[in-house]
Structures are given as structure tokens and as C-alpha cells.
Length: 636
Image (cartoon, rainbow, N blue to C red; front, side):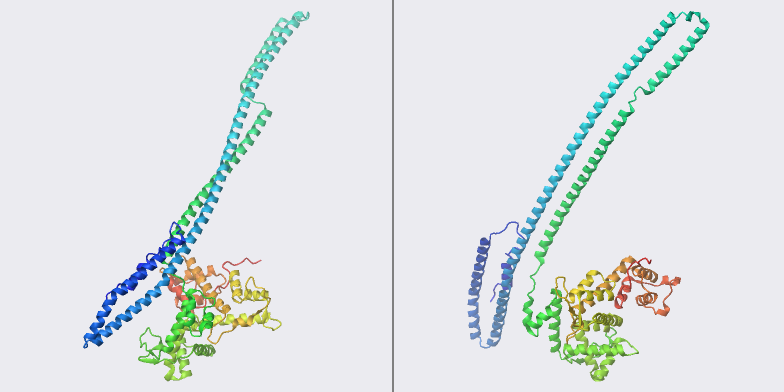
């Protein structure tokens, strides 16, 4: 009877399939031949296993026939083994498609890796070409720099030659001036010697004049020597200015070249860093791809659910339209839960514990009334109408039980309470049921539901006012204008999401929209995509508002925060908050009545400290939304 486990055999066969991307592409024919060989080996192994077990089966049959006393027991044992073997064979047949699926996934991953490598090689080649161009540009700049340096050296050499030439001319001029002075003195002496009237002058006067003349000559010679000493090396101003201008131009060109070289060098370093980061990202993506290939599972075939869901393919297509895999899982769970809920005849009572809601406190079992989803939705709508119409508002859970007592009588109220509770707890995708459940379990304030309904009513009213012809139609411009007037602080992408949910795509050629159909519900309470998008955006905006509050406070969730800090943070992120709304937020966050809420000037306000997580959870329950822009616009 002992035989190899079919599960182990299946996994042994599957383990031969490579799960990691191979570095070498396997030829298709070789792969097919290997698969055929493995399949033949597997069939042979199955036949050998079946032949091995055949003698044991016959021997066991002989035992059953011979031992009449234990024949029923042995027959039941044999039947149990036969059932188990049949079950294992079914499992093996069910696991067979996984092998083909793994081979397909492996081929797809190899193709993706090859595509990524080809793209990477092309990108690397482009980067290398760009690097070579930059290196050529750097070499060109270096050559220009060398040529400019050689030109500067040549100009300096020419300047030194000009300087030597000017020095020689200066010395020749000095010699010439000395020769001219000597000739002038000789001429004067000769004229004095030839003039007859000179000897008639007074010798004392002439001697004194000669003495004074020689003193003037000595003083003049001293001044001349001083000027020669001070200005002997001076270059003419015109030549100096010309050389200075040339030097300045060359210096500017050199600085410009240096700046260009530095910019090219920085760009080269940036490109190198970019290349390194690209290589690092590539390696990271490759490792992530390997991890995904190791842990990923095939996408589920949701068409299999068509035969399971009540209503067939049409109803499944209606339920699955526009939903992702996670949402489809919720829908499938709701359908399965609904079938299981209809099969239950009774619910077990939860007792009288403190954790049990008051409207569910009972012992024993409670009858399941088995209403349809339509009946539950109509019951919840009637409850909301009565709740909104009453003047003295009691606790919502107490009101709910009282409503059931008035509707079905005290005897059946508890049964209907359990029935409705189990239904609204199950159907998360139904907006009416999920909102009623959140309010009933005190996870959401009634004001959130009331304000949401008021917003929808106001939106419908504004659209009706914009429809001047009373035809139930609006243009895209009119529809967009109404949305922006009702939601002035929504971002442009949020307005676009609402328009797309209403059926207006960017590529749509429709001129008119039937706006009244956006506010309808089906008999099971399912709203239109536009209404669903309104609620989802409200939840997202509330989360963003509270996250902005947390960031402004700059604290961790486990840290405590004071009331003035929360007040200050709220006024910072939303300066348009009026005092009444601000106090209502603080009253909810710190669980204080409005009458006991301390003023800003009171010092005891500092004594109120609560964990930030508790504050955010309490604010999450109420209708908290932005009242204006973060920063007030200046008024003219």
C-alpha cells in the first residue's frame, strides 16, 4: 500500500523548472525536448508506481475475502485509501497547469530582462558617446588654453624687446643732450672771447655771474639726475595703456576659458554620478525583479467567479466593473458571506459583556430573519429618515434598537438587530451599509453622514439652477463651474476625477450630460461612480487634512500634545477657521464640553495633555474639512 506521495512527486517535477532568470537564453527546441523528456520520465514513473502497488492491492483483496470477520473493516480501510489516492491524483492533475504557467512566466521574465538589458546597453552607449564628446570638448579647451598661454609668452617677449629698445634710445638721447650742451658752452665761450665789449665789463661782476650760473647748472644737473633716477624705467603712457588693454583682454579670455572648463568638469562629474546612480538603480531593480519572480504568484482568473456568483456572468460583470483585484476579493467575500449568511437559521447571542453593543446583549440563540439586501437597504433608509426627523436625539445605538422595536415589535427586535448587524458588517462595498455600520459602532459621527447628504443635495440644487431649460442636461463648462463653486478648495485633478467619474473623459465628444442620473441608486443601495468618487475624495481630503495637522505639530503619535498646540496648529493650516468650528474640533479632540473649553488666555490650558494618536482618532470620527486656503490672500 505504501507509495510515493503525489504531492512530493509533483513538487519534485516542478522544482526542475528554473525560477530565476538565466543569463543565457535557452533555445526553444532544446527546452521543448527537455520538457518532453521530463514528461516521459514522469509517465514512466507513474506507471512503475502503479505496477508496484498492483500486487499489494490484489493481496489486500485476498485478505478481505479470506478474513470474513474483518471484511467490513478492511473494506472500509481499502475504500479510504482508494479515496485518498483518487484525491491525490486530482491534486496532481490540478498542479499540472502550474508547471506550464511557471515556464511561461520564466520566458516572459527572460524576455523582460533581455529588453531591459538592451535598453540599458543603448543608454550606456549614449552616455559613453556623450562622455567622449565632453572629453573632446575638454581637450579642445585645453588646446585653446595652451595656445593662449603661448601667445601671452610671445607678447611678454615682445614687450621685453620693446623695453630694451626704449632703454637704448633713452641712453642715446642723454648722450646727445650732453653733446649739445657741450657745443653750446663752447659756442658761448667763443662768442665771449671774440666780443670786444666783454673785456670792458667788471671782472668781479663777471666772476659773480659765472659763479651763479655754475650754481644754477649744478642745481639743474641735480634735478636732471633726480628725474633720470625716478623716471628712468618709465614706459610711455600710450604704450603702457595699450599693453594694459591687451593684457586685460587676454586675462578676460583666460577667465572665461577657466569658467567654461570648470563648468564642463562639473557636468562631467554630474554625468559620472548619474551613471553610477543609474547602475545602482539597475542593480536594485534587477534584485527586486528576482525577488518578485521568487515570491510572485499568477494573477487570478476572475472569470471563474462567473459560475459561482448568483446571477451568472451578467451580474459578475456588473459587480466587477471598474474594480481592482483587492476590491474584487472584497466583492467575492461579500458574495460568499451572503450565501453563508442565508444558510444560517440562528445567530449565537453575544451575552451581556461590556464590549458587546447594547442592542446585541442577549444570551442563547437569535433567529436569522434572512432578508434580502434590498430589504436591509430600505430598512436603513427608513431608519435614517426617522433619525433625521426626530427632535430629541438619543444615542444612535439606542435609537436603532428603539426603531426596530417600533417597526417589528419587542419580540422580534433583537432578531432583526442581529440580522441587520451581520448584514451591514459584511457588505463593506455598499456605501449605505458601510456608513450606517460606522455610525452604529461609533467609528463615525452622524454629522459626517448628514453633511455628506447636505452636500449632495446642494450639488443637485446648483445643477438644477444651472439647467435653465429644465431638460436635465448640462454642458461640460456648466458642470465644471458648478463643481468649482460647490468645492472651491478642491485641486484641479480632483475636479477632473469627478468629471471623469460622471462620464466625461478628456477624449469624449459628448456635448451634454444627464446630471440627474448621477444621483440615483439601485434597489440594493449601490450608488453611481460619481457619488462613490465624492465620498472617496471626502475621506482622502480628511486624511490629508489630519496628516497636515500632524506634520505641523511635529510630534510622533505616542507623544502627548497640549490643547493650545492643537489650536495653534489648526489655525496655521486653516486660517479661515471660525471660532465656533475651531472650538467644536477642540471639544471633540479633548472630550470637553464647549462650555468647559478653556480660552486662549487661560494658563490652565497647558495642563490638558493627550496623546497625538488619540487626538487624530477622535478628529477622524467627525466632519472635519478645510474651510479656506492655508495662507490668507492679501486684501486690496
